Image (cartoon, rainbow, N blue to C red; front, side, top):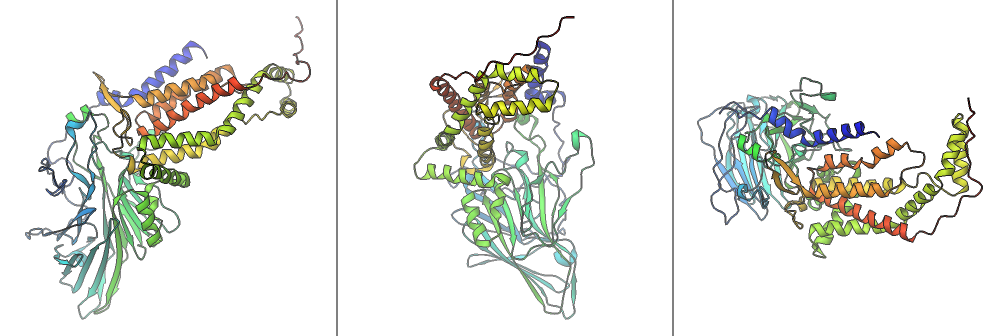
Amino acid sequence: MDRKSITVLVLCFLLLICWRWVVDKLYPPKVLPPGATNSLTATLTTSNQFPTSATPPLVTETTAPALRPLTNTNIPEDLLEITNANAHYTFSSYGGGLKLIELLQYPETVSTRREHRSGTNRVATLNTFTLAPTLALLDGEAVEGDGIFRLTRTANGVRAEKTLTNGLSIIKDFEISTNYLVLATVKLENRAEQALALPAQEWFAGTATPMNAQDKATGVGMMWYNGSKSQDTIGASYFSSRGFACTPRVPPGEYRAGASNVFWAAVHNQFFALVLMPKEPALNVVMRKIDLPRPSLEEVQQDTRVIAEPVGYPTALVYPAIALAPHQVIQRDVAVYAGPKEYRTLATISGLFNNNVDAVMGFGFWGFFSKALLLWMNWLHSVLRLPYGWAIIFITVVIKVVFWPLTQASTRSAKRMQALQPQIKALQEKYKDDPVKAQRKMMEFWKEHKINPMSGCLPTLIQMPVFFGFFFMIGSAIELRGASFLWVSDLSRPDTLFLLPGLNFPFNLLPLIMGATMLYQAHLTPPSPGMDPAQAKMMRYMPLIFLVFLYNYSAGLTLYWTVQNLLSIVQTKLTRATTQPETPARGPVLTPPLKKRK
């Protein structure tokens, strides 16, 4: 590879790293004037704090029309609050549903050394910015009326009831249960003397929003289950105004799916989820997009991870139009999970309802490996009392030991192939005009010398499921939220030590160490036989691409990959030091025919 090509690669690498900073400098985020956004009224209450904390900071309120607005009324809102060991639930008479869930065991933000000044004393919340409370029935005067319900406290929950002028009576019973569950029963009764036709209804699930300004935007959205397969997260990419290859497109107004097979729908962010699980599947699931209150320009400039334009995704289950005979009652049972993405809890609920709700974790195709690694990591932490950082290192070492014989055999095979390079090159030169015969002779040569040309790729291919298992597990494992290791204050986020002065670019140490170890490991690995020198040099610097993609990923993954690289380097050096001298190839070295002089 010539100097010009190397220069182009370096410039592309620097552009990838600095892209966001360049865009922010050229097109700084605009501070919207008051009332210029359709964000929602902040629903944080003074109870949204730890019991021993002081009063939380004030929240600036902005108002906006709801997607399906309840009828305006002068009747004040009535609230009923219930608290158990895990959560504080707030029910509202506006819509007769669950307005706010405050998770008492989880803080809203995990403060780091650099961000200590901006940490809050609030707890994590669900439905913080929402169009309507969970299990509000929307879509018309026939099922909404004025939208005001009467709330009463029951033995272990809340009852919301209302009778409309058309004779429809709606009674909702909410029972607070364990494992972050709320069990709800909704009764629709026709108390009139004539039949009552009800239109299709949207049973509101909630709104997916980031937990705080630093939450990953890609982790915010909606997921649903059709009885056999969970649909991947529907979120920012679905409503994006950019299509394939960044071509402009008109984003859809809503996402609607399902055909009487919506067994559950979840609105979630990176670490928390609110899931509606009806006993009988719903007809459809519908999701839309709304804007949320923007951070200030100062907040965006101080932290490159702040989402400059946060959005939310209100979601509802759709039930078909029905006709109620006089005095007929229809009852629907719905379980609501509102809590952390904690696999053990979700697996318990999945077994209880037999609905695979643990798919909310988002492990996808590599779920088996992600679940096994997560359970192993939690066992090391809870039984052996290993901090999560050391648990990741322990797992990495054990995996490396298990694959050690395979990797060692691969290294020896690569060294043997390197020793036979003169014979291989001579064969390629001799039969360069007959590719088929050259391939056959090469196969015979490899068989004669007991060489497997794929042996160098085999260890990597076998370990790929483990890597992807780690990748998806660490991305949603709430156990790593706030877990520290050495200088890393939160293994679920990048290990930013400081911002580069003048550039406002984060300095993340672990990814740099990971990239350096990958480059050194590539330097120790001999190229495949017959590989073009320019291609071999490009492959040697390929690790820089991984550095770019993982620079702002969670420190837990870069810690795993760094330890994996260090162990591979040690193994390569040990294998080279203990490998016996290679026996010379049988037979004389093939030499290409001399070129005729002109």
